Image (cartoon, rainbow, N blue to C red; front, top):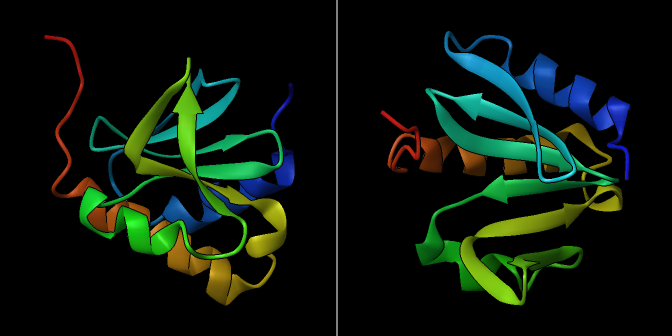
Length: 112
């Protein structure tokens, strides 16, 4: 499945002010790495946000937000957000902010 180029362009613009941002094709989409850590992705027509696991259960109660599940395993701290839930700048910015806020605390999975 191809990823939504418009969502990717919005993410590029939202992250453009940061010094250490890279893009990597993964998870059948495009992942934005911030400080060498996975931060936020576009896959199909949804975002995948890496968020603080402490607020995970609260966030998945929101419409259009669900836990990332891969290979039958649920990943706490990773959520999918449907495109129709980020149509406004305010809603989009909320998810970007949540992903960036956790990025400072997140462990890097970068191989040494």
